[in-house]
Every structure is written in structure tokens, then in C-alpha cells.
Length: 533
Image (cartoon, rainbow, N blue to C red; front, side, top):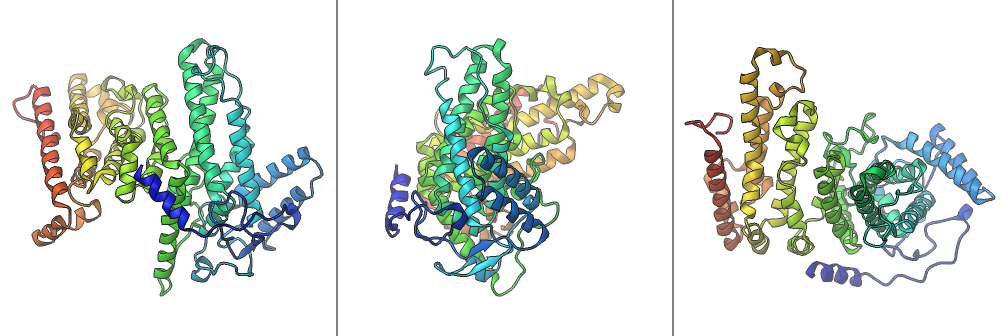
């Protein structure tokens, strides 16, 4: 577990945190009271942010004061629900304004910033983190109903006790984690450990509910609702972790797959950096934060939980629970953690390479040739792009690492790659046959009909992306499109370790040879169709 030791070494190098401060009433809460018990970092972030007197923020400030002054638990819960709903409505399209002075603020500054241009009040973030812990406890309390731990696993599963208001808390955190200042506060108050604990608990509960459903389909109604709830919750949880590491709303990175979320940049409020002399300084600061954030997530066990979640998603997809948005969010978040040899080795040690390999191929039986006509065109395109994403992440988890590449060469794994290349080709061939056999009547069918399953433009785009993804196992993906002359390609090739370079080429040839043999064996025509060529 080299990566675990590496994370531990990095964390040990940090100065020891001072003793936790005494409890402070929420109405007089401040962020520079010393280190917070359980914090992921030991230096309080600054400056302090307070709501401004603008109309929207003044309303939020009033609602927050009402929450702070509530006299009993019930009143506090109600007040917080109202505040959270208003917060989401106000900041749904929010993104931080990156000013170099604010981004790289000296620690310990006593400055107070009025208005939420680059962050939000720390006391709000703290309370939302505490609410996240309550959600974890709620899930954990009902975690004993698994088939493994209880002989009564076939009983009707109960309600998870998680209201939509709890999801709004998580939605708030997906907004807050777009800002480095907010992420520093989030980390300072132990948010990373708490969100990874919530991820672990939610994945475990999702597995339990799916097991209960599989055990007895006659009592499935509540289990179905519970699975839907957990999938929805996991979208928020994984997005929080993703934003924390990348400081960029997940939707900007995978816009095709998150249309159902509510954080789209419809008002263009998301962060932009105007080119200036300070731009490089902002970039360096953000990059340093991202490196630290990845270490924090890995140290809290986030990578292990993401790999396990990916395993569960694949199992659900094979059982018709196709949720492409969560699938893509999880893959993109896992991708953010793969940086360097230690991270690559860690992914292999926890079974991550095997899980990524399992993702190559059809995500569920509903995408078989005979069931194509009911699948919307956008979903079909996303399924193809899902394959590309799996290949790209596998490439990053393997590139330059001889041991990881050797893993791909063993036990028939070359055939998995060959299959991921072949099945779209076989599928489009079958649809061409269907079109020819059914005559002109289907030409007037809807856009989701077989004749439109994969038009030539889609096929060409997929082929180019597939080729680039495969080539990225041999040469870095970032430079594939820039290699226009032989000298440049040779220089890049020589920078790659010779042992990996030679083995990757041999592996690549094995994959292609398997593809050619498969296609030749499965086509009855004397000449391969042009689209397969």
C-alpha cells in the first residue's frame, strides 16, 4: 500500500494542530478561533466572508439569523430548511470571482469580505457539514438490514427516513465546493472525512437495498424507492468530492451527461479568469490546492469508496438500473485522483483496474440489437462516450506503469479491449441489415427507430475518439493531436520508459490482431463493410 504510506507521510509533515477551541455559540461564531477538532487542515482559512446588503443576500442573512436565534430543535430544523431552499435558489448558478489577492490570501488575515463574490460565510459551511454527519448517522442506523447481517433480509424494506430537505443540504454543498475559499473552510471543519464517510455509508446502503430487491421481487416497491433515493443522493455526494478536487462544477466537464442536474451555467455566473499578469498566479495557486485536495480525499479513503461505487453501478446497470449521470460523475471523479505512479498502484491494489475493465462493453442488456428502437438517440451517444471515458481513465491508470500494463495483458483481458472495439461495429452492421430487410416503411419512423440508431456522423466521431483513446496507451493523450511530424513523435517516444514503450506496442498489436480476427470471424461477407473498416 505505497500510496497509503505516501499519504501518511505527507500528512505527518504538516505542523501539529493546536488544541481545539472551546465551544462558541453559533450567533458569535468566527473562523479564526484556532484549529477545529477533526479538521483536514490546521490553519483557519481567511478572510472572513459575510453576506452583503444586496436584496438576495440580505434575505439570506435574515433567514440565517432566524436559524441562529431559534429556541428549540424543531424550530431550528424548520428555519434551516427554509434557509437552505433560499440558498439553492439564490446561488444555483453561482461561481467564484477569482481575484489573485483573494485567492492567495495570507493565512491569519483579519480582513472581512462583504458579499459572496468568492466564497460564503464559514458558519454556514460548518452547519451544513454537521447536517451531512446527521445524514450519515441516519443511513448507518438502518444499515443492519443487509442480507449478510440479518436472516430477515426478505422482509419488506423500510423507508430510509431521508427527506428531500436532506438532499437540499447536499445540493448546497455542491454549490459551495466550487470555490477554493469555501473548500478551505470545508476542509478546515473536517468536511473531507465526513463526506467520504457519507459516501461509504451511502454505497453500503445502496448495496443493501439492491440485495433486498434481488432477494424477493414481490416486496420491491419500497426497495425501488430507496434505490432511487440513494442514487440521487450519491450524485450530490460524488459531485461534492469532484468539485472539491477540481474547483470546477462537474457539469462543465461532462455537460452531455448531467442535463438533469440543477447547477447548469444558465446565467454565465460561473468562474472566469480575465487574461492578465495575475492569471498565472491564480493558476499556480489553484493547482497547488488541487494537489492537496487529492491527497486529502485519498487519505480519507475516498478512492476506495469511488471504486466500490463504480462496481455497484455496473451491477445495477446490468439489472436495468441504467443511471448514466451518476456513472459519468463517478468516473470523472475517480479520474481526478489518478496522478502519478503511487496513485496508479493504489488503484490496481484495490481492484480498480479490474472494475475499469469490466466497464468496457454494453452497460446493460437493453442496448442489445433487438431492443434498440426504444432507446433515445442522446442516450445511445452517451453509451458510446461512456466507453471512451473508461478507456481514457484506464490509459491514465496504466500509462508509464509496466506492472499495470502487464495486468492488462493477462487472463484474456486483451479480448475485453477487442470486444469494446467490436460491439459497436457489429451493432451498426446489424442495423444496416434491419434497414435493408424492413424496406422503406421504417424510413418514416421516429428518430429513435433502428434506421437512426447510429448515423455516419456519430460513427465517425466515435471512431476518432476510440482511436485516440487506444493510442493514449502508447503516447500521452495530451500530445496525440499535436504530433504532426516524425521528429516530434520520436522525441516524445524517447521520453517514455523503454520497458513500457516496448510492452505497450506489443499489447496494442495484440488488441488489434484480436479485433481483426473477431470481425473476420463474425462477418459472412467477402469484403468488410466500409463503416467497419
